[in-house]
Image 1 (cartoon, rainbow, N blue to C red):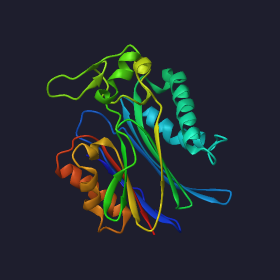
Image 2 (cartoon, rainbow, N blue to C red):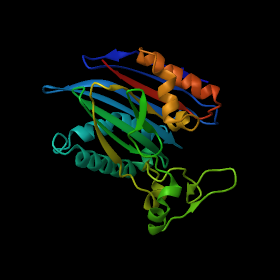
Image 3 (cartoon, one colour):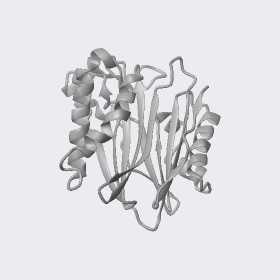
Image 4 (cartoon, helix red, strand yellow):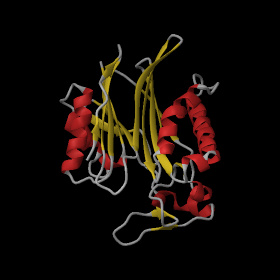
Length: 263
């Protein structure tokens, strides 16, 4: 099992840290994390993301390098962030499909969070990585788990099908366990890459938020995750604690966590 722990960073609004652990499945680590600060004119942006690849390491790596630039280059980002993010996700997915010969035929889920001046949090996702915010000790989910069973009508309207075999989860065309993702060229006619976008304002009751890949959430509820780290002030230590707890609960998948704590 391999782990990677980037150093903690801080701004005048937040501190953040992250932790990744390779799972016990028979493939190389396919989770990629972004956690960085960026100054744009007079705005401080916190850029945070988890990209969870499937049958691909190149696609989540490509997303790390390109998705936020594509979002911030959208002319409507400051005035209509939801519209801009949806456009950037679509443009990025199109480029991934065009580069399928180089990037491979797999895909990736994504959850992204952009924090503007420590006051406005814009979260978007495709797939089953998740964003959860803690206010007054209570967990609130800011993303949508895109499960094939929940979007069966949309998948079937595109000519696909959803099947669930005994002991398994529902899968698109019997293959993919999420109904939205980047890439997956062979399944793209039956999948969507349109994100759900949520805008959350940060107030005095806002304590921290968590981004986690599905290796965390498959064994832990939102409130359990919040309760697990609510007393840990160091966000890097908090992210590590979440991965340790997921492992103790027998999660076998890659596990990635980002914790952002407000000052």
